[in-house]
Amino acid sequence: KKAKEGSLALEEMAGGTFTISNGGVFGSLFGTPIINPPQSAILGMHATKMRAMVVNGKVEARPMMYLALTYDHRLIDGREAVTFLKSVANKIEDPSRLLLEL
Image 1 (cartoon, rainbow, N blue to C red):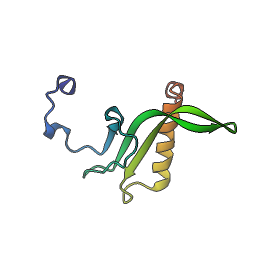
Image 2: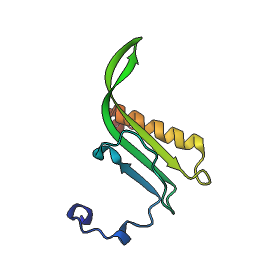
Image 3: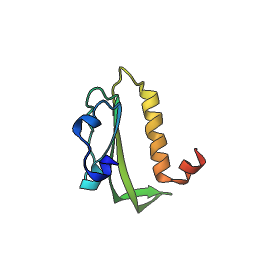
Image 4: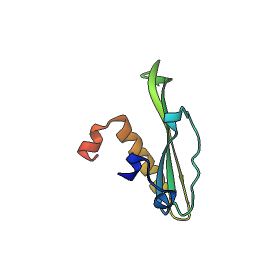
């Protein structure tokens, strides 16, 4: 409620362990998010833009968005981090997967 009203204090946002940063709303096309201690990871979501993609051997314009995951390797193994990132990407590509929990 406070976040919607714009009255959330900085102290009330401290202490999180995971952050989602949506730089895409500001036009960010790609970047590497930086972890703020004590966070263990941060997911950066960037702008969706039409880009050239090869589909069935032909170049087509398709909407594409870059995702970036920065994580503390002392806490999170690379395999789990990449598995999580691919899961997020799959759900963004096909939101019905959220409903079916795939």
